[in-house]
Length: 359
Image (tube, rainbow, N blue to C red; front, side, top):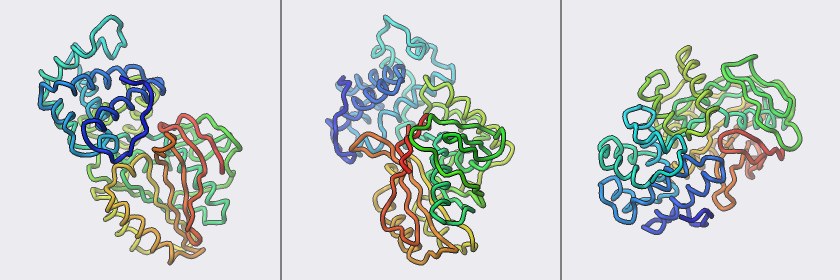
């Protein structure tokens, strides 16, 4: 397995693309301080050459785009769920990062034995809801307020998963020394900040509503386990944040509906907008999972609504998504009136550990 990225089209398909997707995921995990997850993905990749199970055959013969579909993380999530359940002790040495064991042999045996439990994990994209990404949303709102938009934000999120980022009004943020939100907050975030600090202005969250094609109920232990399975085992702080989000959801569930991105955005944009409020569409690490026809519908709906936006009822679009060409995650904002061009405000760690502010 190569430990270097191979730059390929995110929509590439076929056997070679499958292998490259696994190799890239291994390289990414190793470069991101996730050696255990790298080991799991590398062991899964060994199943591709001579697939002996339906699980392995489905991966090897993947008909979609494995990179865009995050195929390696789908498979790795299934194994992590088995480990977290405690039902498969044979996985424990790998997750303990033990030496002198044959990862490939262990994983092959477990896949053969637990295939029925693993196959459903290939059916849908990873649910990688991460509360720390919301620091980017808040920083973008501060910037929008500095541009003169009303600092009262009515927020719509697509790909909300479990709605963790629909509770941003309950969290506290320290963004380069700029303090936002209740103290101490259900969760407190202090990402490593690079560059000048963001604008220090008061903002208000007037509303939060989101959608997902397969929403997760944080108050259901089985569904919460699914989210935990997609957290890399090396990232203890992410487990702690998820537990805090689960507690917050038990206190008051986020406003989350089942819908695809395009239907949701089109419907919400047709609803009346209060004067003195900025309507915001926001999303993080989800655009690659939105089908192309829905991406076009969302973009069209936003641009058409933007053409009708006014200074009293402006519209903004905040996205934290991967730049696949440069292998970085970028915080990009458009706003209307005058939203023809996007503004790249920052580069950011995909799990919120740091923000490189450009402003």
